[in-house]
Length: 234
Image 1 (cartoon, rainbow, N blue to C red):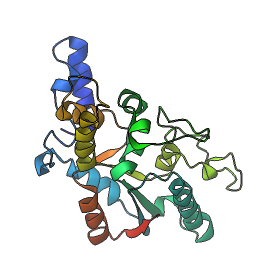
Image 2 (image 1 turned 180 degrees about the vertical axis):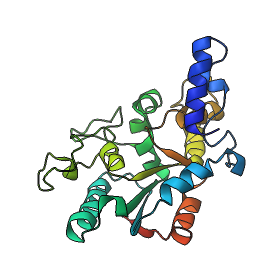
Image 3 (image 1 turned 90 degrees about the horizontal axis):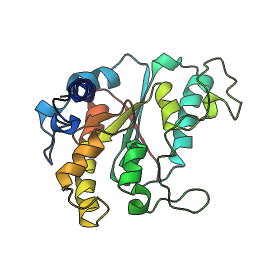
């Protein structure tokens, strides 16, 4: 079942008092290695394969937030410098390893102490307790001045880049592996298994995130099938 179907079915059954949401299934399934039957390939192919004149993917493993400025600069350069219309630009975010945490909701960051687990600090030096990288910092306005430092074209938030058309991928393998580490290192509440944690994370991603079986595999498909240009930041 895909995320949209899962959430809709969960809401209906929970409202009716017939089943807990967690019992119905999770995006990507519950295996350590995601199976084809659990991958919402139709939705993913439609998102990454939409008509476009130029395609770029961003591969991120290490958790380095400055990469978001690069993504924003690429989108601005393609639109305002090279003259591609926004709907002619296809961008795919491919975070795995610690960078998978960018697509975890505040609920997950708080419950599993993601900031402490990965050693992620805010500007004040304190461990982050929520996903500060997701919320938009500006209003969506395609007529905004691209030089306005407080406008949408200078907004490096995940939410705004999504609004501008970036497809956000979530790595099923990374979630499964991190869930095992969260349990082993006692970042998960007592009594939770790795499967419990993985299901919890996969059903509490940021809005619009698309679960792929393995990010390194998804990158290959993006390049080979859809001809995305590979970009990374070290």
